[in-house]
Length: 404
Ligand SMILES: *[C@@H]1O[C@H](CO)[C@@H](O)[C@H](O)[C@H]1NC(C)=O
Ligand SMILES: CC(=O)N[C@H]1CO[C@H](CO)[C@@H](O)[C@@H]1O
Image (tube, rainbow, N blue to C red; front, side):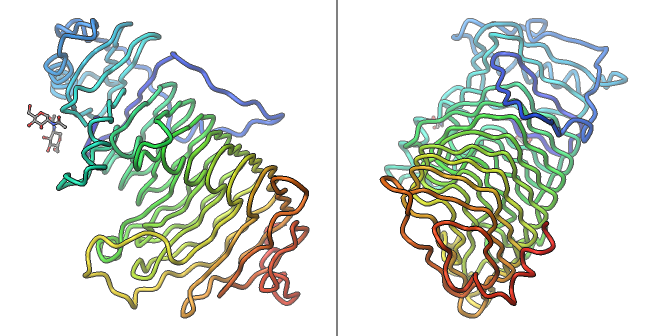
């Protein structure tokens, strides 16, 4: 419902729900995007905003943001939203502003819209197959940099919840993202063709992947050619019928330097899922996922070259993805039905795959069914149940070497 274009420095802030897991030491995203103090402050009520849950506040939000954009106060402006329920249609944010939601403030989308996304109507239109276009994201940042999204609850997005695309320096922390398990495509956070994105200390429970790093779809993504790089995800907890931590499947602009650590995934389809397809092209390199605990998950780890469909039939079947350098380490799971599968492509095998210190227990006993692998090479160290032969070759142990 928020869409902003060429923008700098936006902060969504609200203290309704605080989610914080504390590990002994704390590495954080802070510092990547400096928090701005805004001397100039306005309230949505100054623009006629009414938080009764019934009055339409579109005009108030649009006018307030028009004022912020055109008065251009030095140091930017804070837009305060007092406690109450503010029904509104979609509005654009602007540069140099902080949207501050007080404790108890809710921004609620009308059914027209694209922070309660009221996505149900969109999910039904999609289920009935009568949508001619894609559904709106709840919050989308496009061509923006220096963004902080913190301490906000997002719920019931029509489609993906938070979508930074063509952005750099984005911090997302202390957010809660909720949507029903059966809601279609309600990914939590999708960094897309973006760099220096730091996501931490958040709880996400939705109907699709919790965090999925992407960079464009088939011929369109290849044409645009903008990778996602330097993406950090840490201290994220949640459940998904699909994947907890995902890369792909749309990775046509390339994805590299992703670090996910201290992740807790429960009641989910797949713990860690790296996915691409023929026609995607692009690359997936230098991905590290470490310190993951999972419980009650169908498949612990899945790396696959046959995931997802194509935007149209103009995709190039010779555009093969290049997957190299994936390290998964210190992963512990209980009630994991299948430990994992790693299936590359015949003409584009996945290489330098390293599994280290992985222990995925089955539903009933200590053993899950064995790993399934094809067209893959790499190494495995201290992996239980024992990994497939393709990952055990001693000459490949270099795959794990750089990472220790
Ligand atoms: C938001 O900005 C986009 C791009 O400039 C524009 O197409 C759209 O109409 C704007 N929406 C609103 C609600 O102002
Ligand atoms: C999804 C939805 O309800 N969209 C409606 C939003 O409002 C416009 C005009 O008021 C309608 O044409 C859409 O159908």
